[in-house]
Length: 89
Image (cartoon, rainbow, N blue to C red; front, top):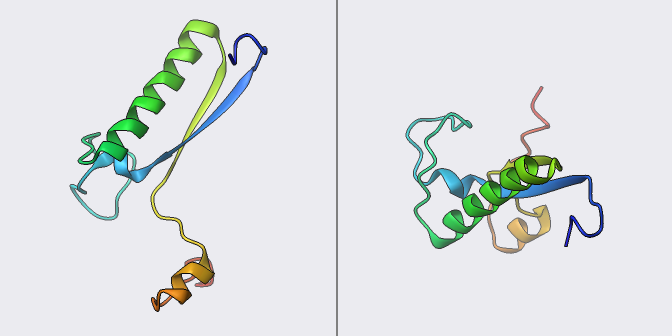
């Protein structure tokens, strides 16, 4: 469908779940890709499909992995302490 509509750029949002259990900390993209959940496997498959589209159809592809994301209000509603990583300087 993307090819039919002449899509030139595609951004695939992935997840840290593609890495499975952390081999070391802090985690980075050098970790081995060994997902341990159906979700992680499906997201890794999505990354691979996106790379295939790049090779087969010359579509510009970016894969971005988000390790942990929550909305601050949701965290506070569940009684967890929110840590703002961008505030430290």
